[in-house]
Image (cartoon, rainbow, N blue to C red; front, side):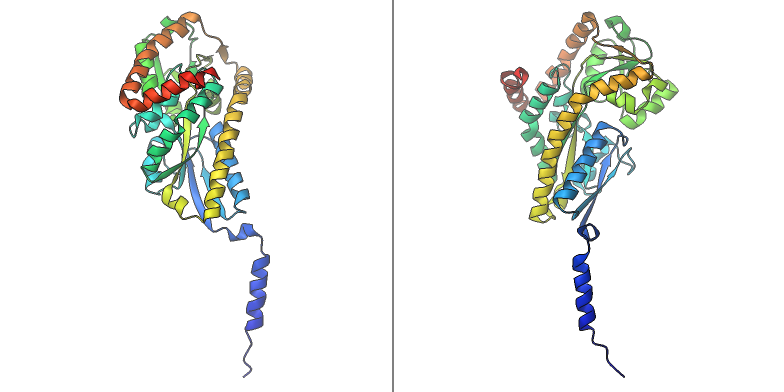
Length: 334
């Protein structure tokens, strides 16, 4: 019986494999969890990051984004899920991490950063402190995902201090709960996934969030007033499991960090242009926009916010004082 010489066949297969596009040879796959929907500013920023990683690694690192909490994780679940590598990357509302470390309440301190420029400056000052907390918990901070400034969505116009009295309003973290309670409202802290169900059942009648978030949640089906109180420019944090990062080749690690740097820059530019587009969409759905709000309401809210800032400074200690000093010296002047 004739014995087939396999060497030429093996050589041909090897040659064929080498000619295959790199996209068919991706070596690393990761899952990326995001609680918000696919059209949100955060999901769009995350997709930009994924595209940058794909290009910089020639598709050797593949990342799949799961929006709308599709993996079963809310922001409050992300920190430990990433630390334990149940998911490899997550986009997480910073305020939900306040139980890990109160430093994460910084970006939502009410009326501290008055615009996107100041919010970005504050983030750059505080980033080393954020990075340290993630590093201590087997994670890498990749980039920030800022929200447009928070306002108040409500069934009735909110333009005076009396309009806040006993208002059942959703807040997204401790700062908002303290501030609105001090202002006379009845705040309830809720995860994003629980907001629309509570609106539908009447559990809440107002929401502290951005025009962006309300537009993505089609809030006009329940609420037809938006008050631009310029409360804060809160951040989401995008973080990655450290073991997963360390398992990448050195060039791939550098590519991921470069992609994160580009995404940071992209997100801060994107948030600056988002509000005008949001307001056009709200107008198309007959949402009445109070902008600016009355001086009386603004003053009342800023006075109500003082307790939240005091409590944050006490909880964070010397780190908070250092950040505030540097922000007052450099950041708020930008």
